[in-house]
Image (tube, rainbow over the protein chains, first blue to last red):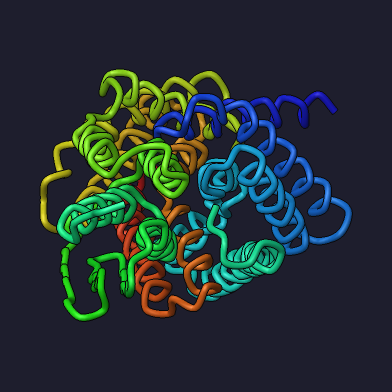
Length: 144
Length: 256
């Protein structure tokens, strides 16, 4: 159980430093990092209980939704909130494992892991697209 | 209010340029152009923006057209600048600042240097280090990733003025990360190089390009969507190529 809390803390720290690299406005750091941790928790929980692709989808949906909400509250572009928060969920390990399998000449498992990783990225993209489309619908013609 | 088309174009150009050069979505650039122009009751305004440049045509009275073309060469990420331009365009549309004041503000934003390179390098290191912990690292991985992140961030700054900046900086970052990770774990005979490599590559992954590709495509900016997706693919595959070469060499030498 402590493992999860440690992971969430690491996620919080990593995404807040990442937001700092990208020069995110200082008053958004706390919100972004908390959303990142919460999204990561949702991702972990869904992957453990249901399945991994659903975990990517649910985590991204949560982060994108919170991003749009904060964007309206702070009157700032939504990207500022979504982009640093989404980074911990991006399947970097899957991409790395794909590359590793190719390097080890294990084409079959490379294709298997690669297809899985692409599916996860597509799940993230779908989640982001759905939330983004819903956000446009709610406030047509107004930029955030 | 009497305004000259030239001044208005100057403000609009600078606003769109800052947005596109600092990682804003292209629809945001187009909307900002429209947003500012509409608030000055312009007869006609049309713009097309892509990640590599934009065109604006503006007509104050409906007879005379002013057109401007601007090529975007350098693209970095600075969320603060995007936010500041957003504020200026809001203030302009509320008429709480004049056009000249807005131009002044935008020029200040455009010329502002990133806050302290030293800090930004340290943040890059710390971010990599915490990602290494997240992917199953311990103390050794943490400190290796910290140093590697700092080195990578310093080296990729050297490439900033190059024409094909993204390709070179990604491939060299990949090389450096894999080299240091494998060297440290091989010499110390301890630790897990996977978590160091993944931790250090996480902050370099094209997350913003991917996010923007989706957001642009949803808004109907198909051209920009494809351009961003290509950018994301280029960065990801050059990172993979960089790390892959070193790992392949290490395996061929029988180090692991």
